[in-house]
Image (cartoon, rainbow, N blue to C red; front, side, top):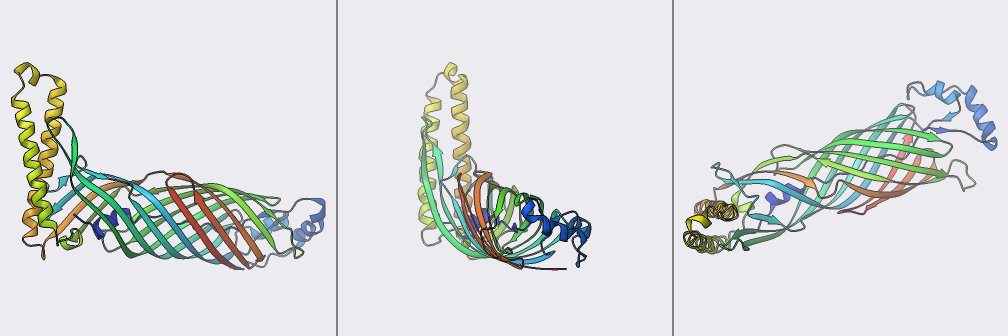
Length: 374
């Protein structure tokens, strides 16, 4: 069986970074004493951040209080799923955890996002998220059943790559501390990804701590370059439910043949299990290991047989049949390492690149930010 949008929907829970690399900087050092003294008497001209004038007069250099960023983000991530249940035509749901195995399924996503932000407090930035994404989901999986010797074999397989679009929206905040060019930022955001194959937008939460330092090697003192390292942790909502036409779930050109072959194999293995069990003595049938093996084989074969038999019936009305599904999903690894840099042309305009790696997730971000007073 070849899955398309259904399995793709399971994995479209990519997480996008939206951190804007600006911060409140404490002016220190003898060479900066003149600038520090000038800040103590300056009249702060903007309404935000709250307490901006008081903080500026204490020797902190504030960034412009509002900004707009445009980012491009690419990510490839492995996903793990369990508690998989599937039903047809609003009938009974079949638990497939025991008989369906996924092999290194990936979701690859490219997104363009717009991020408006304001400094609400001198050390707290809040922002909104709006993005459009193109995704490619690569799935490899199969249906497995046991025989009388508890050897499991694959009776059907499916592999697919599906492409579709999604919309992401959300909110975030970044507490920061800047001291003499160095800074610590704790970025966190919540976002929802809306696609037609899910019954509600998919929720994700991202936490990204970063530690870095800014250098000013240029003649123009308004220019600087920053480098940072940090981590990226993503949590996605566990529950996913949806409803799709059967034609979006199965390649109908060879589905009947695969279902028939699967039913034949299930019947053969069930006969082997029954013959093995009936050939045991009463004492051997009471052996706990034999009982477990017998129950496991019967349960798996019954699940596979019921699934294939129901699918066989649904194929007779494939044009009007539907598939209902439910599952739990999570990233294979919660954390990965990130490293990045930003070049500030002037206090208004900044360019940023960042990469993430290690673990089962790889990501790249590039963006431009424009800031202004508010």
